[in-house]
Length: 208
Image (cartoon, rainbow, N blue to C red; front, top):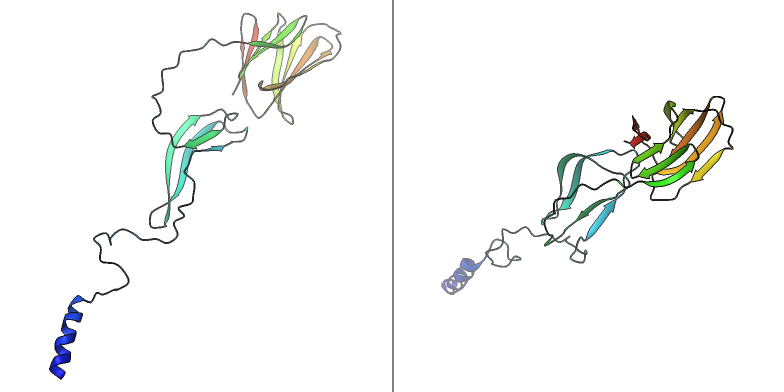
């Protein structure tokens, strides 16, 4: 009888496995995780809006979940100039055509305000001030952010105010008279520095 039971259990011991709860499969080395959510929608496009103080993008970091459920991240170093008015996008785009070379476009200015002796033309971050009057000084003030310019002229005109709507970065133009000069105040839609250049028609302001 003992010999019979011994011969009966030997085959069972040969076919037993260390862990009977996993199937016999050649793919056992693939990480198995139970926290994967297959209902998450695929990435189309996400946007990020930066504040008006932003001028360069230094890097982009993406955090992601691996197959085994662990979380990791990857960073791309960039150091590129940006326009804070435009949002940043992250997307997956399949089959996108290669970008064609861009032709340089002529800057087209639009008149935004004018008086008999001075006119203002805007194009993106540029403001052309057309006048024959000499600019005595220019400086920047905050709250609200604005450029202040003084031009030499004896005049007694009323105070002039012109409010502007988007897409102009210049929100308002104000002109007031003082003894021996008049003051121009140009309100901006955010935080900038600026560069002013003397041109044939008057002065050119570039927002930075």
